[in-house]
Amino acid sequence: METKNPLDVILKLVLKGEIDPWNIDITVLADKFLQEIKNMYIPDLITASKVLVVAALLLKMKAETLDQQEENQNVSRKRLFGIKRFYTIEEIAHILKEYVSPPIETKPKKERKPYERKNSVKKQNTFDYKLAKAVLEDAIKYLEEELKQVEEVIKFSQLNYPNKPQAFVALLFLNHDNKINLYQEEPYEEIYIEPVQVYNYTYD
Image (cartoon, rainbow, N blue to C red; front, side, top):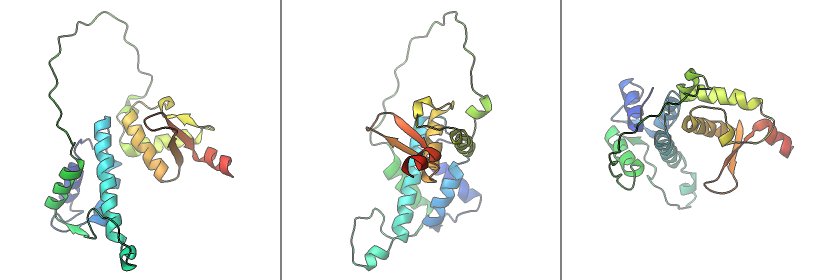
């Protein structure tokens, strides 16, 4: 499935009859959304960021719905959505528009002068075309197997995968499942990938 709008993923669930558009259980939607995005092809960082923000938002809503124990103990904390569990599709669309839309408008691109191509030798691709068009779930499986062969911490920039945005999202899933450990030494700098076998050896 190739889409750049996370709301399309939710609408697909409605069309498949997996959720009721007038009575959406947010705990069910959060889980089904995570499963659906594994079948997505993520072509760029913009799509990756939208998918991750929506996934985080839905999980936040799910957590606030299920986590009522603190309130029963008279412990108050700020909640985005209270403890509401059921929403309509219209309410979900409104929430996504409010929290996921970019804070500033993008300016239209300026027209560029035609580029005159010079004669040059075209470099051959060194990766599998099928891998470049793989869905997220395939990327997760591929990287998991590849990283099992790695015996040291590697940099994200060293990762041999043609679609870097999709690889990054796949690594987040692997990190969540404790298959790897992702970390940065400084914000906005290199991302380090520590395979689980290296992590366990280091801290045993």
